[in-house]
Image (cartoon, rainbow, N blue to C red; front, side):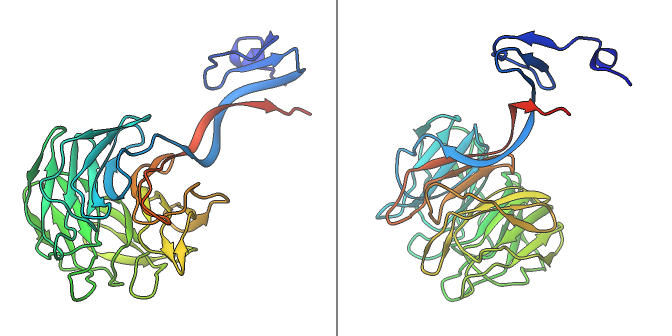
Length: 322
């Protein structure tokens, strides 16, 4: 039988204390505890506290866990405020040109996109962020609020929402200059749904019909297909990830906000045993299934709370041998 030395070329090191900076795959024997240990990638699937927003509010946004951006929303009035996140704290930067709530956001921190929203009525406004300032982009073809958007500033997808008189399933694609109507709308017309993915491969989930919806749909760049539903029907939730590996978190269902977090594997949703520390809806979401960001929103009042999701992380583990 091969032993560790013949396979790895080294003996297992014996140490009195665990290494302070181990590398992935490293194995050692802790002589103080009498245990064999290793440093490996482990599933965590938990939220932890991040730095609070400077302005508590409902909010839209994009980016990643260590380079997030949040903008717009509502305090007691519509907001144009913009903040950027560095993985530790938020910094207030230049505001959007038009204050609005019920907008959606996507893109990266230095190249974000703010889409639609409610000014005095549902709007068709698009704004583009260049890392310093906001400028006017191409207008949506269908003015609406409470929509979802995913993708990049130069390749975005907007879907669903509320026109002021009715919900819409309209889907539009953005090329960095103008929006083009897709001939294929959502199968379930709704507003205040969540979403994640890119322009050619996205997931839409939840929303309000009425009543609250658990419906999920998958976009292939041309059309929407109904897929397995959420375990918890809800609207105004946050989302992060890609079409085959995403997260849904928070939201609202009768009669209050929820903290529920679900993982999407490309086929079905799995409820995580623990959810957000602060149950809330109309929050911002960014990042991936392994490293996400949830920020702002409303619980009993507007909140500035930010939470960071860790899906997987390198950890020291005790190795059991027999």
